Amino acid sequence: MQIRTRLTLQFLLRGGIIRIVASVLIYLSSTGYRRDNFYNLLRSRAVNTAKRVLDSYEFNDLALRSGVEYPSKLSSEKFLILNAKNDTLYLSDRSWGFRNLNAIVSHVKSNEDVYFKQDPYEGLGTSYATGIYQFVVVAAAIDNDGMLRLRKLRNNLIMVCLLSLVLFAVAGWFYSGRALKPISDMVKKVEDISITSLNLRVPEGIGLDEIGRLAKTFNKMLERLEISFAAQKEFIANASHELRTPLTSINGQLEVLMMKERSAEDYKSAVASVLEDIKTLIDSSNRLLLLARTTSQSPDNLRKRIRIDEVLWQAQEEIVKFNHGYYINISLDDSLTDSEQMTIFGDEYLLKVAVSNIMENACKFSPDHSVNVRVENSGKFLELIFEDKGIGIPEEDMEKIFEPFYRGANAGSVSGSGIGLPLVNRIIQNHYGTLKISSEVGKGTSVRMRFPLIS
Image (cartoon, rainbow, N blue to C red):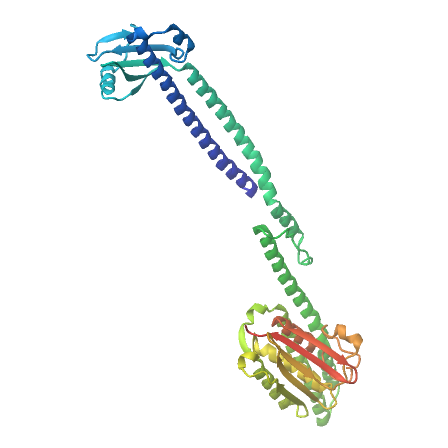
């Protein structure tokens, strides 16, 4: 069953129950009011009839005609008046008898009014006193007008209930359709989304209700999927681009080597060249895997407390160990007096990869193979500043330095893959940080990393 149909039925059921209960209460209330009103009229008729019969000396034709003291007659009214000895003093209709008369008289003598029903009559027994004498008056009549009004009210309530059910059904169908329209629009939009159109998004509307939050959550999921598919596609393209060259070189060298007999020196030279290509291949593969990892990794997973100064010292030690001509000078700002001032959330390995890349690039592109690293605290942020006196980056290349495999026009003489800066940028972004690079050709480059401190 569709949600719209189910909501309409629920709306109809609840509205119908409320309407029926309200109608029943109205009918019961009207029934009680009719009964009380009829018994009041019957009591007035009984008392006035007793007065006319027993106090004939006070009888006044003008009062009877005015209808004030003597109300109008009721339909088929019957009266019985008894004295204290239960002798019948007056009976308006001798052909009609009151059932359970003894019980009625007994209750009236106990100062209780008695109400009874003797279909189609309704009656009451009450007492009447004149002077020192007490009398029992029993009256009965048919409330034709009251019952007619009740029947009309009942029929009207039934018609209103039936009409209300129809209106509830129509209103339920209409309003459930309006309430579910955003979901219907979302379903139609989702049907258009495929692996080739992950850039599409479902309408979020105002976004304040549950459907809006669902649309936002779904769009965030689509965004993550789009990033993952883009990363996968980019990784395949990057891998094929980056691995093709060394593999082709290795294949060519080995084919040439196998064409004829070579001397031991030739074999050694060829193996050394192949080994160098293999190292390049391994380095490129590792960088590509890191690039894919940082693209698909959620920043929410980077919740380990890391001291950034320890990461810098470890990176310095590893770089200098394998590059004896490199000089890395690390200095801490005087305001850094507490380890908490240098602690951030993150992944220690990825952070070391990021700072190592910047350090290596600075040393590699500087004539003196040196870089100065400063650690500063700016309140809520921790900043790492890398400065070198290298060849610099041309202004026209600054907008493309974060594109994978892009290398500046003046970097051709220095070996590299063009993966380092894009990798560093993604690592910093995943740590909720920012990376800013400023450079001047021939004077050097300044790289500024900023990370939020643990609050």
